[in-house]
Length: 260
Length: 166
Image 1 (tube, chains in turn red, brown):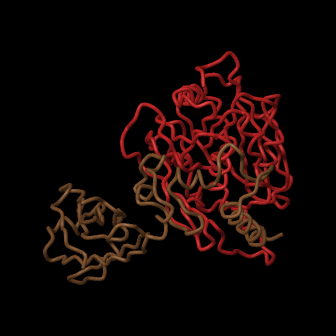
Image 2 (tube, one colour):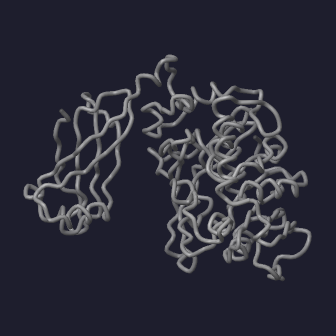
Image 3 (tube, chains in turn brown, blue):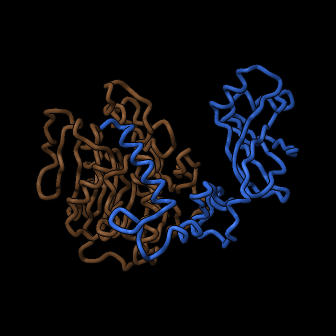
């Protein structure tokens, strides 16, 4: 990849399920970007019945697929819907709806992509953790993704890990994270999200599909953003979508990666 | 549709993509194969095994391996019994964590899973002279020894404890 070009527009994919962190996440994303005017957000907003869209997030910069949470079909379905909002931006950045960002995160991502010397780099990791309301306690941290275990169904589960050594350039990766994935915009065309997938298996299939499409996988060598992991007492799709209307033990309890 | 119904369809599809891949819109690409990915990442989806190099999270691509590597990977269950009476007080008084690692006969770390503050608190609360930490992992190498290295909040790293694995 060459360095920063004249355009370098970003399509930022955010799937948000009944998440009060959505607006603070987008506000911080814009505030910390070096070129906020080059960001366009595609959002699948799965909201409370009758909830109004934030007046802060209006205009051409925001494409919003809005629906009552009861109509949601899950995270992969939401990300597939968001990909339909892509409009040829140079870069695709896939996030969740609960993040905070390092200063100039957009420029850092472009620099990191250039340092890979790959024509089709994917930069991804399980980002360092933050807690809403205690953002100042969150340390900048470079992380990687490591194998955790196989599920009984044969799926690979991942866990965050610290790099074995500090490097100035991105390190090769074997896995990707669904909450932080940065790639050239052609990723949307080449690897459209499979709306039939639900949750577990999302990340290993993304890694395999990207790799077999000729993308090269990397972990950023710089801290780019934070992610909220535990999300205690927040609504989860699997808690809401049961036949009985009661609470079942969802996939979030079955693996590290599911806490994303 | 309830989440667990979606999940069942999804799990079946993921498993199929990894072991009987297809090309197309929701499938794999044509630039590389799934076998190429498995060799690169040190993973066998069919055998549900990973190489030691992958366990250790070393940077891919993995070193070349013969086609039978996954069949040589074995499950290991290691019981690490530590006599608390032989430890400095700081090891159990204010532990941050204990490093817990298993090594081969050359001293190469095969597996590491530290004992967290909570795991230690639960073990220490049993109020026994000896505590047993259990670690399970898969490796193509034979684990020959274990090492425990307590980290105390007040003292820092303490002397390591080591023993052979019978």
